[in-house]
Image (cartoon, rainbow, N blue to C red; front, side, top):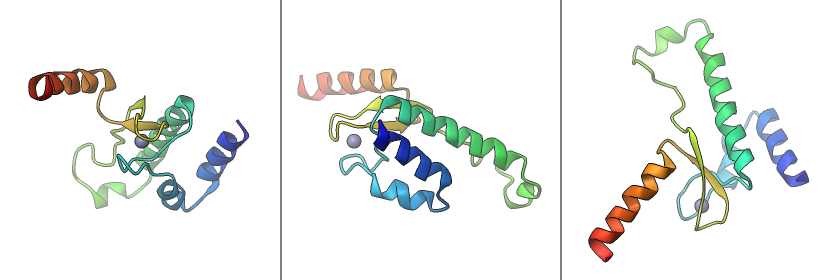
Length: 109
Ligand SMILES: [Zn+2]
């Protein structure tokens, strides 16, 4: 659990969040890898918090007129069969698995 805590701390404190994330990417999916489900969930919460903060930023309207732009899309955490870690995704994992099974059945069944 110590490693988990340290990672989150470095994530929250770091001004170079992208650099931290880059080091932890899964090679199979290219997504950020988390050690635990709760870590992935916390990351989703953290992105929402960042978005809420950004919404309150004065002058943000000047930059973007696109509706809903900048809103975090990643909402679901799921375990990865390739790296054994967890990833966040905007796809509903249940729906995704269902689609994947249907696909496999159709083409490999
Ligand atoms: Zn992975």
